[in-house]
Length: 264
Ligand SMILES: Nc1ncnc2c1ncn2[C@@H]1O[C@H](COP(=O)(O)OP(=O)(O)OP(=O)(O)O)[C@@H](O)[C@H]1O
Ligand SMILES: [Mg+2]
Image 1 (tube, helix red, strand yellow):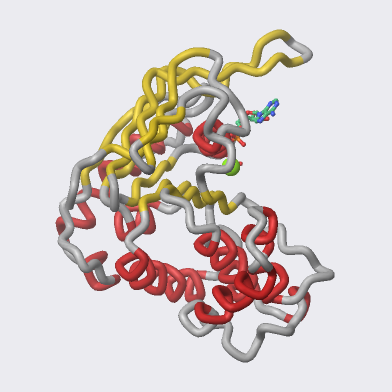
Image 2 (cartoon, rainbow, N blue to C red):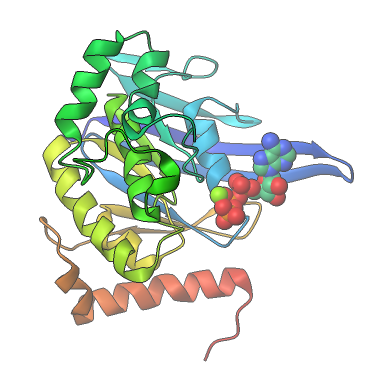
């Protein structure tokens, strides 16, 4: 795999003004994502994971530190990142009055791609995303897993060199979640994207990513960086190995410490 860095966060801090003074959300967060990598962020609830993605996307600027996004041979830093990443936010945010196809093409429409071309591109991927036959359905007729796949399709169709996924499987039951993870592994191998995945599930982080950044409670700092040594292509069966169990236990130790959970 080429080692060209697509994204580099260096000592990023973020604070918000609040009624009680300053709310420090991120502190000294550094991370790098190279081309073709999927990197996970995991940390206690409310620690600042979505804020990291908002900062990467350019929706928020860091209070201090820097973010460099290098795509197409150019580097965008502060104030220049908006519109350069595909972002699947924590809620699926499908528009209830638009069909599956209408929701899927939304990102392309916003980019000014003609509707006919946008529809063709979406239709070509419906099967891959397990949505064939559902193009004209409305979101309320879909299962939770299908809604997530529509949001996913919209994100991938946006055709950006960096994909940000905020707990994409968070609302799903365990079985659907496992199906979606297997499906994402296939998809990722096929489309060859670079991405950052936020999850609260250690197994998911290990199974899907090249590297896991374990964050502390708010203000989020990087507590541990775990290079996942499992070979590619990955499969769920790898979760049954002792190597996997040891990695999982070491990350859970750090997380439980951060959350103040008592453990032996
Ligand atoms: N725009 C904002 N203005 C003020 N405070 C904010 C803003 N965005 C986030 N926060 C605060 O920052 C903290 C971290 O929020 P964030 O959503 O990044 O956490 P998270 O780790 O994604 O949480 P969860 O696990 O619930 O998804 C929270 O206390 C939140 O209220
Ligand atoms: Mg969040």
